[in-house]
Length: 237
Image 1 (cartoon, one colour):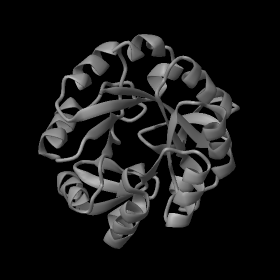
Image 2 (cartoon, helix red, strand yellow):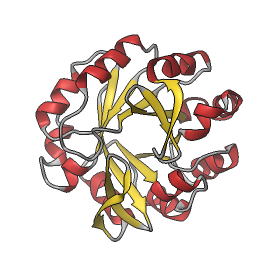
Image 3 (cartoon, helix red, strand yellow):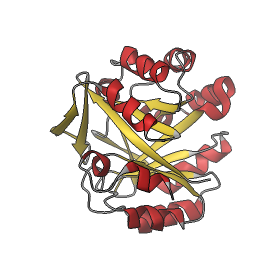
Image 4 (tube, helix red, strand yellow):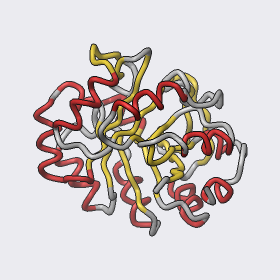
């Protein structure tokens, strides 16, 4: 199965998009993230990807109530991340109806944290692998670790993680097209499925991603918000 997943990014309580993860390049698309999530769900999305951008940067979830309201307002599946640095926060989200929690920063720094999360929540744990020049970024993409992307994903498999979301930061929010080479290379070397994210601009981009073995979906943000193509057309794929 291949999933087209609309993104709802929350900053300051609003639905926004950043360019290359830069907090100084904010474009606001809606005052109410819940309404936007409901819209994507009503159009037929099977999954919605929600990010607490405030939490990703600060390390503390700051939009939990909005995320809980989204999860309770739609019948579709919600995966959410941003500032999840402990099991308690993950449990809060799952209890609120979130189907998958996306962990990032602490997973890069603390192997025992990944083990605990997988033990407690199983397949409900997804790791966000956000890459810049081949290395994994942390803290809302404001810092770069010394972990290489491909090696990190191989570690995730050994730790029991069932899937990862790969984002090329240089492409995210640019509408320049995905980094197909990096996605293909990572998918080929990975033993767990990859969800691609960053740069999608057209239906053809989605068609291309769908053909790459071991890529099970794509997260789309700006292209949908700026009307590059209707979500319904993408979902038909």
